[in-house]
Length: 417
Ligand code: AMP
Ligand code: GLY
Image (cartoon, rainbow, N blue to C red):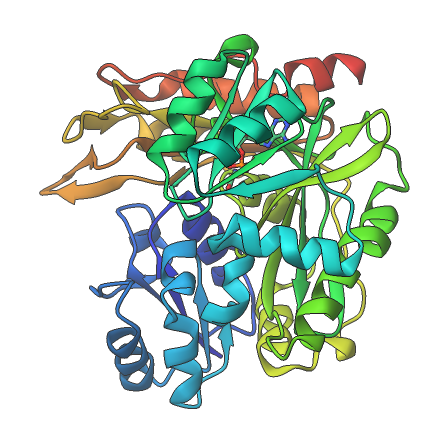
């Protein structure tokens, strides 16, 4: 099978790594990719937001499957453009990707499907904003309706700050604050059949102890030793299947990866958000644990034949990933700094620990930083404590001027053993 992956972050590196290990895959391309992905896939330049260009590239390469990684191309209709030239694509249509692209749309789908989520108001005027803020009280949760690359959500005790964020957006969702640990649960679906993956936990804040600003995600681990073993079944029944059914009934079936961001509250599981693609950095740890070869599962989802897939098989291992971010992330990250120590990790720590690249590029013989999140150092082990130890040992070998990373990824969960 010839596979083309669209995107160029650590999530796409994790996808390409898994696909490169799949005996069914005999040619693997990534566009535009990054310095690390070039070691497992052939890179092609492309504007990932240009559906026509992506479809042309897929046709030229004779791709049997296109996998669209990030949300922006999905919302822009890249999967539709590829489907239009008759090539199977893993990723939802622009219509179905509105589940991530519009928080108000997601709320409407959840209400219709009876999916538990925070109570909310959609507001477009200052009066509506004030009424909603007063109705829920502090802590305030204000979400830009549209895609905002992780920066659209403000959670604050400060009413003035909440109001200012709301008024800076055209349309906002203001909602009830949800208390309790967060879980990311992914499911692969063809629009009818839903195949859940294993849950993971992401660390959204920039600094240790969940301090500092929100980021795209600074680390993740899986499995969750503290979670109820029935969690996946429960979320399948109350969230994932009803959402997929609702979108199909609306005539806009969702095929691809449905990401449920959940809060485990004292009153039960609630959806915080949906995404229409694999999460980053959670994918790095979930795929590290997946035993089933990935390509045929993604192809079956793309072709509407997922019912033919048996349940996924998982390793006993635990996995931890630690994100190394550039100086000044998430504000205005500095780029162009050389990264050293990659060869040492490959020589000393592989295969238990390895480096997935996010924002990197080659400059002559050097690899330099090219984005906010630069590397996602991933490790497996017999338990979280061992995976964590291996991940941080590899992190310590990496040298990137001014870089930052959290030191407490999976720490609490590992202590529970
Ligand atoms: P989102 O971009 O929707 O994932 O939101 C970013 C982060 O804001 C989430 O991971 C949560 O930590 C937090 N958040 C979002 N909605 C709520 C809510 N209703 N209650 C508490 N925290 C929330
Ligand atoms: N890790 C959060 C996200 O992918 O949206």
